[in-house]
Amino acid sequence: MTQPFTDPASVADPLMNVGPSQDAAVLEKMRRQFDAAPYPHIPLDESPLEDLNWLYLHSVVTPYYLRYGQVVNPDGMMILDAGCGSGFTSLTLALANPGAMVVGVDLSPASIDLATQRLRYHGITTAQFHAVSIEELPSLGMQFDYINADEVLYLLPDPLAGLRAMQSVLKPNGIIRANLHSARQRVFVFQFQEFFRSLGLMDGAITEAELAHALDVMAAINDNVFLKAHAWGKDYEAEPDLLRPNCLLQGDKGFTIRDTFKLLRDADLDFIRMVYWHRWNLMSLFKDPTALPQALSHLPTASAEEQLHIFELLQPRNRLIDFWCGHPQSLDPGYVSPASWTDADWQRAIVHLHPQLATPAIQAQVAELVTHRNSVEFTQFLAIPAGEPVRVDSDTAACLLPLWDSPQPIAALVERWCKLCPLDPITLEATTEPVAYQAVKTALVRLEAHTYVMITR
Image (cartoon, rainbow, N blue to C red; front, top):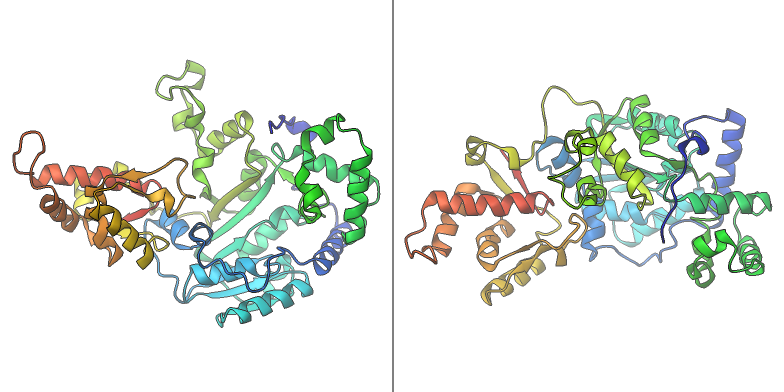
């Protein structure tokens, strides 16, 4: 569905606090809603253990690498699941980060009870849950290496107060993952919320009765009415529960990229990167990014905020502005793309496989493909980091197989390449070390751009 643009002047400032009494009333409505129907509605026995993409999204390894250029071990880390709901994300965080302590908080006691049951059911002992609001985080007396605030910040009456509370309990090198609903992509959903609010359907908990009333209302409206024709999907009629996190969501607010960066500045936090960064690739919107008109020539070197702002104006397709952030960085440059490294940097390089790929099952599949001289498409194992298929030939895959056992210095991979490809296929001359080095480096740069491998110095 094509989404219309929204005039920023028509979007209410989501950073404005409407007052303590109104805040408390909104929070109470939200608490009643989630006490009545803890979210997400996922069966207690369901596990994300086989969903590598979901585990990848919740691994601390990726954002720490992208911030600091190092591969961390999550064992012993403190991870906060802010707005943990029914605990499925808390379970995912525990499984994606072995050995970490996961602390979940939520304002809904019913959700906290379910989250506690869920992790106990799956045998997770390194977890604890507290029925407190995000604004009350300092009262826990804990500091965290990683904070997951997924699908919650846009619900808070005062998002800035919530983000500041998280910033206050974040360790100096810690990282926050948070997201906000896009005012531009979600404009029709906000119109539905205003419509149903005017009918009194969002005055309290969203029960089965409210869902039924909303369906009755929409059934009475002509199909060619603009809002119904453009934004009312059959999914709502098939699964009325989808109305709760959408058209009947209490406290929902929309943000633009400009709003998001202002929020971060006001909370004294630095933007790191979008979680789904390939979905925000501004240069992908142009026919030839190397031949831009003069008016656009500054875009390749523009700031992250400016590039994301222009992308949002041209392609408002992302429901979430989903990002990692952290305390303002020291003079240490942190992560620098290996594509820009010098040869001296590369000589000291250690290559790591992303932990979500480092499984015996994937190792066996890669070995089988290599045995039959087939190429290996990494996106078949882990799709989220890439916007397009990422494939390597069988020789390259064979060269990388030792990564499944342990990180490798680049010298070891170059040596392995020389053994795998001893002759130039055209000249039949012996493969030299510089030729092998260039082949290995080219493959690694491409894979590292999607974090399939991580390269440290």
